[in-house]
Length: 387
Image 1 (cartoon, one colour):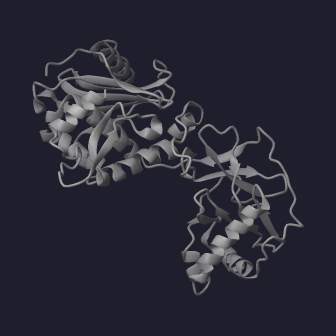
Image 2: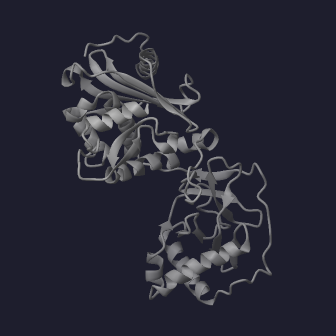
Image 3: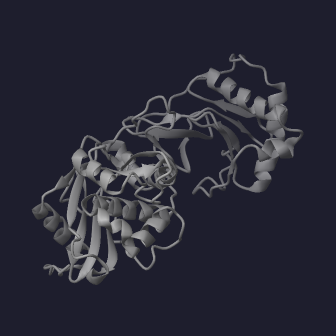
């Protein structure tokens, strides 16, 4: 597969496959996103600027959509242990009822059996009953306060202090009216703090008390620290949030990249140029090309260990179909007369655990096309159009 991609690199003349620029440093852009298991067997040349933007959409889908829940058990695991966000499920919140009262904040990584508690400081701003310090160990709370102290040194007052810390005001079921929920500041795995509160007024009241706490905090005082364990099987409240456009850009990117490996001449095709602009975020639509959501994940069980994609022709149209974790998308690129007669169909698959990606024989592609289009349109037979 490396030879196929290398041939494309030569065919495009050292240009980025996305923006067409020849004056930029090129790298290898995985056809299947790395976060979903893509490997370097299949890649296309991309400049670092284009790849950076495309990677944002891919990471958003892989870490913050329902795909991330499948990654927890099917992989791939994080590839760079030096990066704190590697393999992380990026949820808007993951909260669990704490045995000592209130709610604990947590994160989860691919391959981990249990969530990891995040250090936090909670303050009862309503009744002024007290402060809760939370963490896997007390030193983590000291680390949180140290980060806050550095922010405080750069600011002049509470308002400017609050402006330097992201505030999350998510509506959380069963918690909005729970008096046992106290606003808190949390230190995430990237060592960045954020404040969670239920409304702006509560966030400001919390920030005022936190500002004073940081000024008077004494490090290393753990005499009142009490250990408690959240028992296995305790339910967590979780919210995933992602943009639908990011999912569509990722799907279109995989299909366009795969098609370009077999058909380098598509770089000059107007339809593909319009779709490429959509993939790069230059436009909000793909020039009339529709990305259709067909099924939810785990609906299609034909390839339990693989993601599969197909690009080719069907009923006089050029189409692309994908299945990621059994979730189906269809992309209608338009009538075949908008494409060269030399346009070839191509299919590929990628192991979900991130161990291999490969171009597949034509017979496999036909099977993928017919299976997915039958799921999309309820059709038992698919007539192949002439390209």
